Length: 454
Image (cartoon, rainbow, N blue to C red; front, top):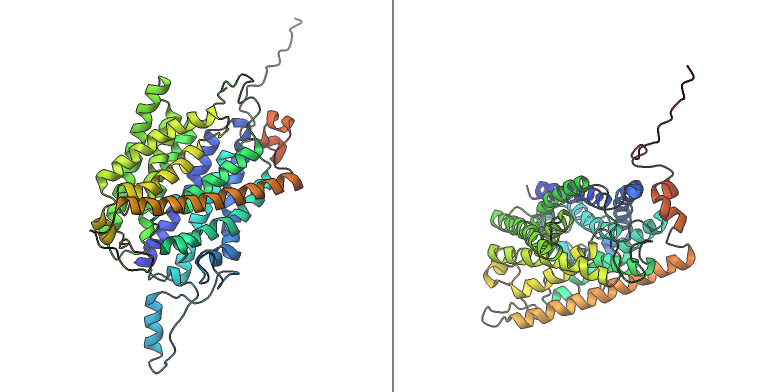
């Protein structure tokens, strides 16, 4: 049952790729739809391969507090869960040898090795997919593919090791249950680096600084995509229990996740209505996703009431964030920075701001600990201490992810170029990059009339 739960949850997270593809393509222009779908399709293949080749070992391999050193290349080997350790002892009753694996940081879950690997692979793919929408409509397909491979091979797993792989942040009580910082902030920081190196789309900002809207071609597609992502999040967050041993924990995390989505949608609706004068659907959609991101880290540490508040703040942040980044002329076609970066940071801080000691100790089974690993009693824990820990983690991961991504993008820009030509951008990346169109008959063709000479 543990194994089936983790695999099914992983499948739900994998299905989020379809959601991202629909959201990103729907919020962008029809002439770039094939390109965006191709990126979302191939990014998971590249991510899964790079995570298998090197990323898994760097993230979960035993080693230093900064990166894994064992089990690095081509993830494989015996499972090292407690269950298999007990089985080894039962099968070898006269052996004095103690069973030892090389992925000690993830041996707390009883599921087999490949179940752990698959679940973590789909998380890694999510981080890379976040970048796709932010750099849409002007990046070369090959440059994005290479960047995605490197991101999941090195950038994502090293900071992931710091938190989930037995590294220095996790050991110092940094808490991120399902990946506000590990997944969403890393993808967000990488996206910001890509946007800055690429520059805005042609025609997005007038010379006087005015923002010129470039509407997406299908809010139907975007809406369906958000529904798929909402469903997938029921694997993303509850699946991070990686066991069905405690149905109470799974239920609590799932309801907290759902509350975040609901209040995020409603808050975005209200804020957009006030600021823009209309209940903008694209803002509502991003508000839903922002609420989901915001509760991703704290969902197992806070009450359901707090989850509703966190989601609402996240939804409001998404609307304000979109307007803020446009003021700075940071062109993000799908609002990825507002959803994943801003709310990845906020959600990580929300762990401290809304922390409930009893829930953290029972639901998450992760009571606060000091630098020696000793549990901090409830009367000794303080919000300010936890907030400082969370801030340090946000800063460390932010500097690492942004700086390394910026270097990668700059190297790609110098060596092979990362932006399509202005002609390709005007015509559409579907034709220029892929040689075909998503909607070949989308535009009406002029009718040819024949004259009558009767």
